[in-house]
Amino acid sequence: MIFHGYFRSSAAWRCRIAFNLKGIEPQTRFVHLRREGGEQKRPAYRALNPQGLVPALELDDGTVLTQSLAIIEWLDETHPEPPLLPADPARRALVRAFAEAVACDIHPLQNLRVLSYLREEIGLPQESVDAWCRRWLGDGLAACEALARRHGGDTRFTFGDAPSLADICLVPQMGSADRFGVDTSAMPRLREITAACAELPAFADAVPARQPDAEA
Image 1 (cartoon, rainbow, N blue to C red):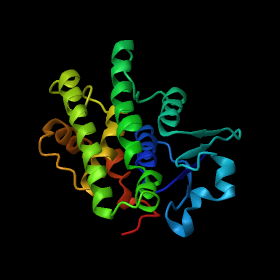
Image 2: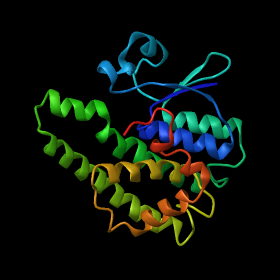
Image 3: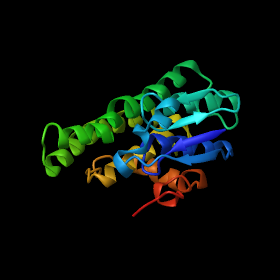
Image 4: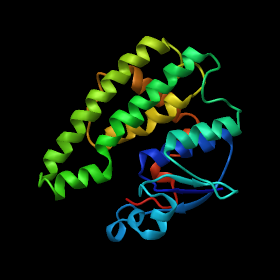
């Protein structure tokens, strides 16, 4: 299989964590989102993923999977150990809801194409764009803090003592919060979980700075 990603992409970061947890190392192709107008916009990549987004995963039979959550759930279904979702249906739904709160509600508002639109089409100065990010990331993560407290208790990770899809989505989003200067001091539970994840090689090896295409 061939994984197309970008070191700083939160969505690609999620997939890297999942691959690492499963002990799978796909071939990689790097799609630089900022170089020469964005490699993701070029016809060759658009033919692979019409959305012009990363990640994309080419399977050995030629099927192309897009969207990080779909890729991770495919990976969990085809390589079930260790599981990334609980066996209990209600707990599975809770984990999915937490993951979607990040991937569907928080992350899209900091997406490169959204921020570029705010700067280039609306004409907002960079400080206003940064304020936009801090507002929506902060609000979204505050809700995740409440969800983690409600459903996770004092477990090591968000929904238990083993990492799940929830943690896979949380860690890159907390990384984005740090990058955009979001104050997470009122989110001690999320910070504890993030620190616990950082102790695992699967998470530590997936951080943007450790990727072959990483830039300062």
